[in-house]
Every structure is written in C-alpha cells, then in structure tokens.
Image 1 (cartoon, rainbow, N blue to C red):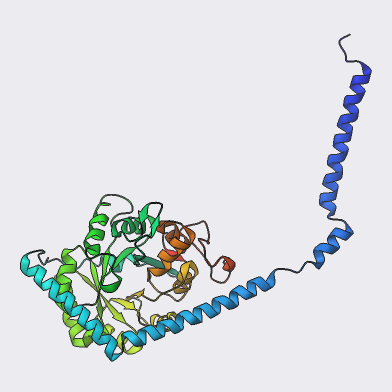
Image 2 (cartoon, rainbow, N blue to C red):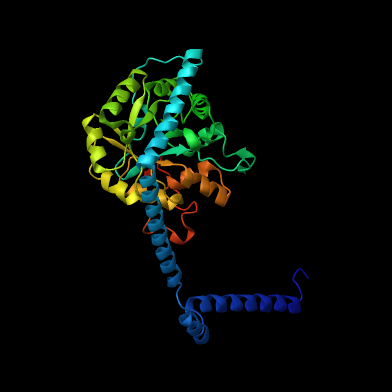
Length: 369
C-alpha cells in the first residue's frame, strides 16, 4: 500500500528513458557534426577575408593621407610667412606677460630643475608613456555632463587614466587663457594620493624668457623651446633661463640637422614635431639612450598610438586623437587612455574596429608591445 500503482511507475520510467534517449542523440549529433547537406552549405560559405584586406588597404591609405597632411602643415608653419606669423603671436604673448609682471600679477620663481618630466616618461624598452593634452572643441562638446574644454576635468582624467604627464598648449589651440594655472592647481589636489600629481608641460612658442617666468609661476615643470624659431644661440639662452626658473627644456626639432644642434646644446628632452610620423620615427631611431623623445605628431585614434609606440618613442602627446575618440565612441578620456596603454598589437590587433578601445585586458601602466 506504500508503493505507487504499477501504471504510474511505468509511465515515469518511460518518460525518463525517453528524455535520456533524446539527450544522448543530441550529444552524438554535436560530436558527429552537421549532416552532409548542412556541412556542404558551410563549406560553400566564403571566409570573410576580403573585409580584413579592405580594412588594411584603407588604413594604409589613411596613414598616407595623414602623413601628407603633416608634411604640408609643417611646410606652411615653417615657411617664411608661417614663421613670421608664429613669431608675431609669440611676441604678443611676451608683451602681455611683461605687462602682467609689471602689474605684479605673478612673481618669477627661482628653483632648481628636478627633471620631473624626464623621469616620468622613462619606461622599459618597448613601452611608451602618454602625455595628455586638451584639444579645443565646439562649445557644446560635453560628455556625461562634463565639458571636454574644461582644463581641470581633463587634467584629472589624464591622471586617473594613466598618463605620465599633462601638456597645456597656448595660442590659437589653447583651451583657456588660464588653462596652465588651472591644470597645475588641479594636479596639486592629488598630493599624497596615488597616482600623484603629474608634471605639467607648457606647450608654447617662446621667444622671450618672461614667458618662461610666467609659465613657471603658473605651475609648469617643463616648457617647449622651438629651435627653428630661436636658432641655436637663442635656444641655448632660453634653456639657461628656463633652468633658472626650475623648468625642464623640451627642445622642439623637426629634422636631423636640428636634432644634432639640440644635442650639441645638451638637450635631454626632444619634442619631435612639424613632420610626419614616419619621418619622426627615423629621427628617434638615431637618438642616444640617455635622451628622452616626445612625439608631437598627430596620430589616428588608439591604433595610431600603438604605431608611435612601435617606432621607439619615449612619450606621445595625445590631443586630437584622444578627444576625437571620446566624442565618436561617447567614452570618457580615461577609458581611451587605458585602451592606448593596453598591450595592443598593430599587426595582430582587431584592425576592423579601428582601435575602438581594443587591446589586451592587462594594463602595464605604460604603453607596451
């Protein structure tokens, strides 16, 4: 009386046997593979190789166009008319700095050079540091309520993203007239934290030491000096003045002749620009090991950063390449920086995605192969 009626037990057993049989058949079919008709259909489906080839060809064309534009822009900037325009703007900035000094708006500091930027971008072989720089966008360019033209917001994003330094440009491409001061003040907020404050590079055209005095007063730890704009003697004098204010000198060069001149002046930081990425790669390959190289050449998104890394630069200034990806993919700057710092391979990476935040999940803290 305690057992179920035989009919009920038989039904349950039949149900279980049927379920086991179906499961076994499914497992056998999975191991055996698809039937002949299905398999034939799979064999007839072409592999998507054409899409990869199309992408690689398009990327090569894009790199060639980017190099052509860089050469044309450099020729225009370094022409007689272009140089005169740059000098006129720099002299106007120097005159404004002198007026501010006379009014007592700032006091020229006196400090020893601590080589903060030089040390910060020293990375293992095969690695490259990033130096974040803002790029002026439309007044309506926001991301999650944050203004992409706000120097303080970008400064924090560069630090938490893993950059080794921050560059603040002046002139036509500056984010704001007080961008250097605001960036330096924001970095000091991270005192005693990890990551700590980053060295700040004043990315400007200098023709007078008063500009260096103002940059140092605003909190910069290094400044760019154009060899083409000031010549050998003028650059040497500005390097001495910069050292008196506690500033490192990042001498900007564009060809082999200027590189040789900068090295003869004792420059330890070279900012290579006004040329294409392949041309810059040829220059960095000949530098002494104790000289740090900063690539100031426009690259295209994340993969462009990986290509600069593979050329052997110590650091890359990421500006347009960084902000453009932020706007395109609607991601914050720190996410793009982390993608650039990933162990991404130009050869074996997911090329079809054009570098959209791809790369290994492992982060090295520096851009490594």
